[in-house]
Length: 234
Image 1: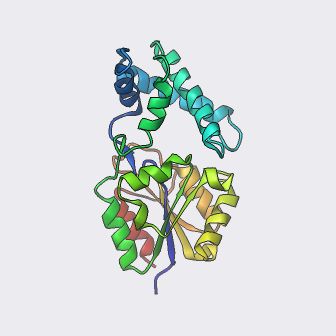
Image 2: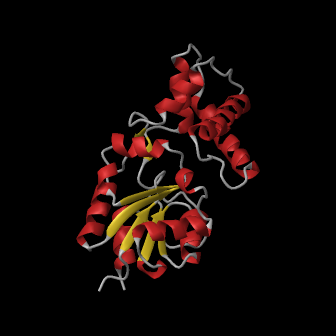
């Protein structure tokens, strides 16, 4: 007998990865506006801006609406350019960048994604997505041909809370129609994708494809197929 019935996957850096670094993509779009920018410097600026924004945000930095998401990301983009010492391109740079990150032009699904979903299906599991993201995630999954592979997609902007808040796991469990001890989660972030679901009564495991992350003591697999197989062991 399988040890659980439902498997949720995180989205960013689990199911989907940026085709190039965030800073390189900021720089690529900036060139359309006549601004030459160092992608590496922008990437360092983005990471610092991201950490600062997340530390100062309470609960729902992405918000629930597109307006909320735009407000959050506009702040990130401005801070990224300021920290990198690069002039922010003129409008409509932000609108162009925001749309860019909604498309398959920006993201790709690693080679282990579809085999992992297939392995879960072969084991008789229902599969879903559980992500802290704004509403662009739906378009991203659609553009990459992933949307129809899942039974349910739970995104924080629709729920109103983010992982690791226990309420989002409770909501996902109700959507799946399964009790906590029959649900599992795979993601890349120790707090959101391991400690959060485990505290909710779920099974969980992290994926770290390049071995560069800090698992903070959580069990880790080097690819998604291995993570699925390990979770399925009694």
